[in-house]
Image 1 (cartoon, rainbow, N blue to C red):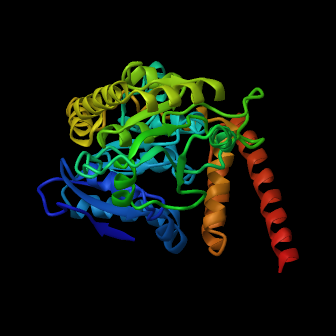
Image 2: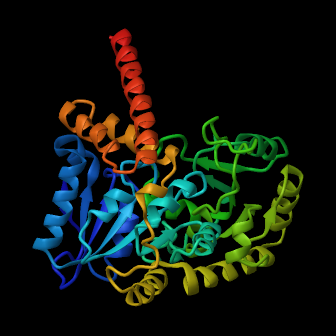
Length: 398
């Protein structure tokens, strides 16, 4: 499925490759359209209809028929897109990997990023990790449009606002603690509930302060590494609040201090500190407004869409197409777990296309080196066993 975005008739164009149409896509489309025309391609329906090879042919056809000079790969939780996929896309374009949830996906994304010219991440710590590994990378927040997030001059009738999923990690414990101590917290949103941005802006502007929780959801057993139950993550609430001119009080996360000073985003470490700081800022309007103003200025000067895209454009201008320092991809160096994740993700999408599944299975053993062939045979046997398991489970459910 292909759709043309804002300014798609301009001289140069970019392909934005998404897994599927999601509510947050408009944030990205608005950002990219500041610099050139955008052609939106949604991969999921194309893969289901034509297979992974069909998606590659489709993208290369669009590149050949349009004035496309770059492709943005939005890879989060879309494991069908791997190094091999990226390398099959025309070498005439700049290839850019984009990730907004890199914390639990970093190892996978880094391997895929090796086939790209540039990585854009909403996590400043991840940006440093990519650079540490020799990849070109820049900070790229999701919700950062000054035209969308702005002060609409609403009366401050709400003491404390939280928007988002209150069920993640220990957020509910914090909110219950505050309410038990007579702090009026307005909570909007929830699991799977999309908040219209324009309505959200009005809510933010009506609040004296926004409270931000930084923990990810508790990780499942597959995601946990060395007993880590969660990560501290930079959340979009901070920049959203800042652009709206509302103070944001945040749970501690190391990434906040890479972007903001303590006078711009005060933070707390636990429930006691949280309650104490909320009471302080609610009782001191001058201090609260000072923090809000400083945060607003920092976001407008550094982290809104036009500034972000200007930085991205400067970085892209330095890239020699087809001669990227990131493109160190070598299929023989890819770990077993990476190949397994890619293969299983593709088979799940191709479940009703046996010929394409067979092609993916045959591709595993296409190798001339004996040692690699043995490893691939092991992956092939593991995958076939997994397919039979899924088939049997599906039969039982029906």
